[in-house]
Amino acid sequence: MVSRVIPVAPFDLVVFGGTGDLARRKILPALFRRFLSGQMGDTSRVIGAARSEMDAGAYRGFVRAAIEEFDAAAARDRAQLDAFLERVGYVAVDAKGSAGWGELAAALTEGRVRAFYFSVGPSLFGDLAQRLHDYGLADEDSRIVVEKPFGRDLDSARALNRGLARHFDEHQIYRIDHYLGKETVQNLMAVRFGNMLFEPLWNSQYVDHIQITVAESVGVGGRGEYYDRAGAMRDMMQNHLMQLLCLIAMEPPAKFDPDAVRDEKLKVIRALDPVEPGNVVRGQYEAEGDKPDYRAQVGNPDSATESFVALKAHISNWRWAGTPFYLRTGKRLKARASEIAVVFKETPHSIFGEEAGRHRNILTIKLQPNEGIELGVTIKEPGPGGMRLVDVPLDMTFAEALGPDSAEFPDAYERLIMDVIRGNQTLFMRGDEVEAAWAWTDPIIAAWEERGEPPQSYATGSTGPEDALMLMHRDGRRWREIKP
Ligand code: NAP
Image (cartoon, rainbow, N blue to C red; front, side, top):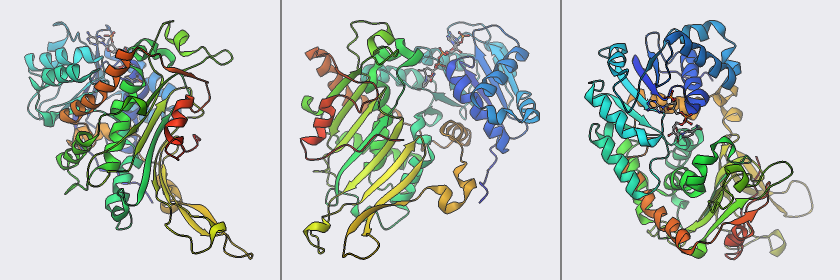
């Protein structure tokens, strides 16, 4: 099967923060891969913008080095890399001043899609929106893309939304959550709403519980300063895990249209009960060998910030009343492994006798390191010796069923950037969704701050603090193994 590439209309994409870490690691390599696929077309342009003074030639050298470092395989196609770099320009611009804006305006082409990627700290979002307006760079068809973190609480998120809304309509604002750009996350919607099989069972009558795990094996690395101000709740739970929860739990939208999908996601967030303090566990990783502990790594010996959080959530609506959602995320855990597991109830009775046991189906949506969907079903263990039952995975990994090419799909950033150019907001968070998510997480964080309890420590390479295990054990359930 050869993947189909639908070219997009010619565009000018300005990457504010074009010299930053995110641009180097994700945005620029993603654009090059879209160029390689033929989707970017011959005339589209990428313009880096940051304060550093350099000419376009120097910036092209920077972009080349970034692509060589972060996608060495793609960079091997020297001729194509040269052709891509011809479409790359640079303008030195200060988001807080007047320098460079006239030059940037002159660098843009009339009559094509304009996208402005704000790959800078959120404190600059309002300044950039203001200057795009003041210097007449944006028209009613222009789009802006904003990165996380979108605020650190409800008030700051509201302020950011207000700052952007001054000059851009909601349909022009693309708040990125790269988890939503993953192939499997979209496949989750296809499996749910493209089959008769699952949706009738997708409720508290048949689903025992749902687990969402986003585990990382690395620590905070070089992002210590930022991370220590955020923590796992703000950095991961409020956005990525809650977005996954919404897609799993939402009602079927009437159509696959941005507002129809986002309306349903918003209803899920609004139906979440407040989390009781006993249903949240925070952790901080310990040292191991030459790996420093969390506090040493962020350079804050008194830090009370969590590098792990697990919680039990309830959605109070007809579909989900009585089905708990267990969510956990953390750093320096046993493996890098992210998945959603829909754990169905056990069969009510075993016709094969006590020894055959009662079994349950588990639908697993794997997000990383490998993407795929697996359905655990119970069958007879082959061979003689009576009716012994065994659970086996029905693997819906794309490459098996659809051929090897099907496993080569654009990564999340590639897909999301092209969605921006196409004007499709389905996989981007709407302002009210982000605010509702903060309204749910703020009281959890406030309760921690009020109690002043430090996070529990957990061993590097473990599954998190002991109490996180207890969160499920006391309900007679257990977390799934963290394995890649
Ligand atoms: P970074 O490495 O610190 O880069 C910041 C960029 O902004 C640089 O290009 C910097 O260039 C530019 N900049 C700073 N002040 C400016 C100003 N006044 N006017 C114009 N440009 C200015 O940050 P980053 O890691 O790339 O992160 C960018 C955004 O993405 C942040 O919101 C971050 O939270 C988010 N994000 C990052 C990651 C990641 O893995 N890095 C992941 C998710 C989200 P000059 O100094 O030359 O101006």
